[in-house]
Length: 497
Ligand code: HEC
Image (cartoon, rainbow, N blue to C red; front, side, top):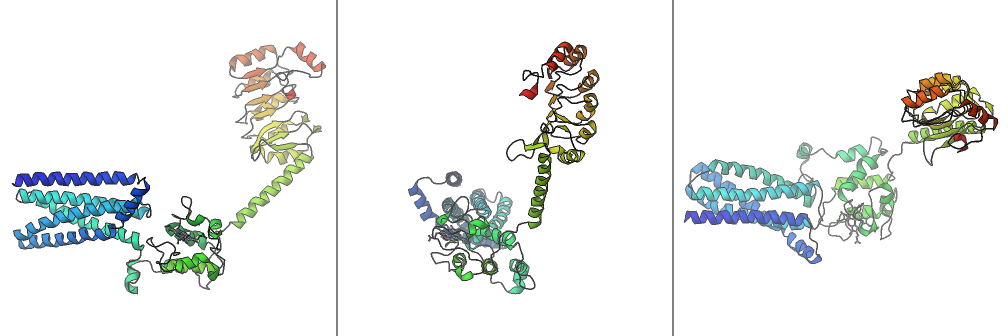
C-alpha cells in the first residue's frame, strides 16, 4: 500500500514540476493570440488572491512541524502531511497565475524579475518538500534532516518573494510609509530626496532635473511613455519630450505654474481616477516623490544643466581657429577640410608665389597634426620651415615638387609616421636623399625630373619592392622634359592630376 502511494505521489509531483516548467516556457514567449491574452489577464488577476493560500498553509505547516518536533508527537507529524500537499498544490497554482499576470506586460523591471523567479523557486521547492514528506511517511522517518533544512530555506525564500510582490503592487516604501518616525529613521533614509533639493534659503539647486526628477519618471512612467510605448502619444524620457503635450494636447508642465501643469494634477489624482498617473494597479509614487516633482515645477521646472563654460570655451576655440585659417587663406595658403565635417585638412601652397612668411608657416604648424595632405609645390619653402612640421602624425600625402635642398629634407620627412605618398617631382633630390628614403614604408614615390642616377634608382627599387616608384631618371629624358615645360602624363607628373 505504502509502495503504491509513494509511486503515485512521485508521479504526481514530477508531473506538476513539468507542468510548471512548461508554463514558464510558454509565458516567456508571451501569448500571441488576442483571445488567450484576455484569458491570461482574467486568470492572472486571481494571482494576488490565490497566493495567500500557500503562504497561510506554509506558516501553518511550519508551526505544526515545530510543535511536532518539540513534543515528539507523531499525530501532529501526520497532520502536517496533508498541509504539505495543500501547500505544494496551491503554490504551483499561484505561480501559474502569477506567470499569466506577468505575461500581460503590465509589470516589468528588476522587481518583477526577482519576484517571478524566486516565486518559481519557491513552488519548485514546495514540490520537493512534498516529495520528502511522502518519503518520510512511507519509509518511517528517512530524510528528516533534509526535510527540515528545506522547510527553513523555503521560509526565507517565501519572505523575500512576498516582499518583492508587495513592492510590485504597492510600490517600495509601502510598509514603512506610516511607520513612527523613530522606526522610519532606522528602516529608511528619511526624506532624503526632498532635503537635497531645497537648500537652506529655499532656492532650488541647478541640476535637480537630472539628479532627481528624471530618475523618478524613469522608474514610474517611462515604461508607458518612453521609447518603446508612447501611451497617449506622450513621452517623458527627455526634458524636451516631457514638456511637449501628447494626444490630449494639454500642457503637461508650465514652469512655475503648478495649477497649469496637467502632469502634476495627474500625479495627485486618487488611484481610482481614470487619469491618475501611473494608472490604477501600477506602482505609485510616494507623497514625498510627488511633492518633489511639484516643488520642481513650482520653482521653474528647470531642465538639465548645460555646461556653459565648456560650450563657451569650445565656441571661442572655433572662432580663433577660423581667424587663423582665414589669415593663411588670405596669404594664398589653402586650408580645406578633406571632407565635409572632417577635422583633417588638405593644405595647398600653389597660390603662394615665392617665399612663405615665417609667421604663416608657424601658424600652420599649430595644426600640423590635423594635416592629411600637404602640397608645397610652387612655393619656396625652406627646410627650417619644414622642420616646424616635424612629427606631423596624420600626414599621408606630401608633395614637394620643385623643392630645393630636398636631400636635407628627408630627415624631417622620415618623422611623418603616416606618410604614404611622397612626390619629389622636379626637386633636386639626389642619390644621398633617396638612399635615406629606404627606411620609409611608402605606397608611392614620384621621382621624375630629379637628380637621381639610374644606378641608385634601381638599387632603391630592388630593396623597396612594395613601393610603386614613378619617374624615369634617364637624365637626357629629364632635361628634355624640363625643356618642354613639364608637360607630362599624370603618372609622370602628379601635379597634372
Ligand atoms: C501603465 C502605463 C502608464 C504608466 C506607467 C503611466 N502612464 Fe501616463 N498615460 C497612460 C495612458 C493609457 C494615458 C492616456 C490616458 C487616457 O487617455 O485616458 C496616459 C496619459 C498621460 C498623460 C497625458 C498625455 C497627453 O496626451 O497629453 C500624461 C501627462 C501622463 N500620462 C503622465 C504620466 C506620468 C507623469 C507617469 C508617471 C508618474 C505616467 N503617466 C505613467 C499610461 C501610463
